[in-house]
Image 1 (cartoon, rainbow, N blue to C red):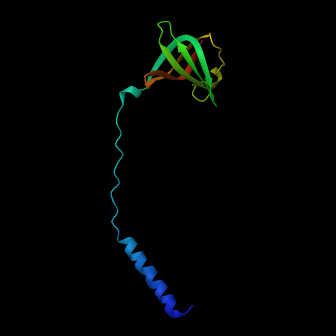
Image 2 (image 1 turned 90 degrees about the vertical axis):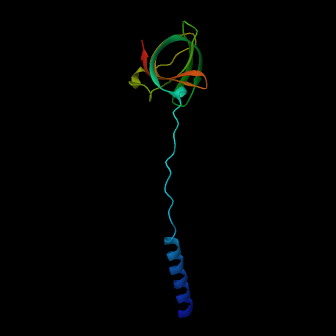
Length: 118
């Protein structure tokens, strides 16, 4: 390449660099999070009869109906249990007592089981 072409390329690169450095950066706006009391998590203990089981990759979600006819969807997996050795398979019709994180999602009682009570 000739020296004139090289000088033009270098000049264009210098101008591009100067122009890119001259841009003002906008301040980052923090994301606004809203508190939704419907999804508040609390510790709860539940006992009832298993009426349905849906298996997942790490465990299962059981539908439990309590003595006062409340319905809970409880997710049981080794990774969520305080003591993974507590994990056990259950059958429809079994009585189950569990303790864990409780919240309401789309009007349904949900729990992530932390302890299976014997």
